[in-house]
Image (cartoon, rainbow, N blue to C red; front, side):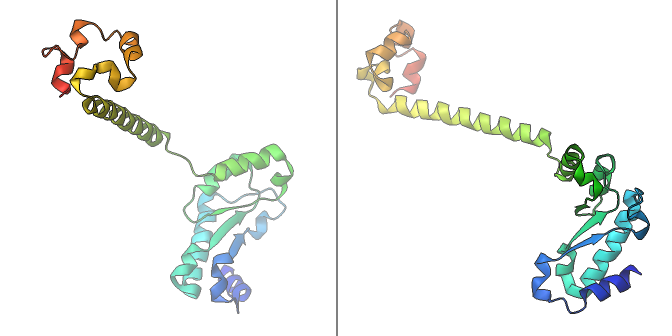
Length: 183
């Protein structure tokens, strides 16, 4: 029955407009009843529809969005929309309740892998730290030893602020740690 409905509905549909096509499926027994198909049942029908769309339109048929309608509610939206062939929901009565509708919208959002995001943030912070250290070393290597370490960062004020007058930090002290970095 679904195949014949799809064939009849799409007869003469211009293939160049396929990117704009959205199909909604709602089981006839679910209309206005409050009953909902299981996620697996709904996905099976969506898969059948998708195969037919590929047969009708070629590979581009696989990209046509297929929505599930039929008593979509916040408590079943996540399970329904996590199915591979269900691309979204056609929400009826639940759209009249703002909180319920918002929860359904949240269920449709792709889930972010927060663990990967945290790893990426730490990697970027580490790279940023390395860049800061390298830039500091480049600034230090640009100033001659005779000008003093503070001159690299703004003069005597920097020497005083950082207590760089100590013999360990003196650029004239070849055994100091700065001596090995500073030409």
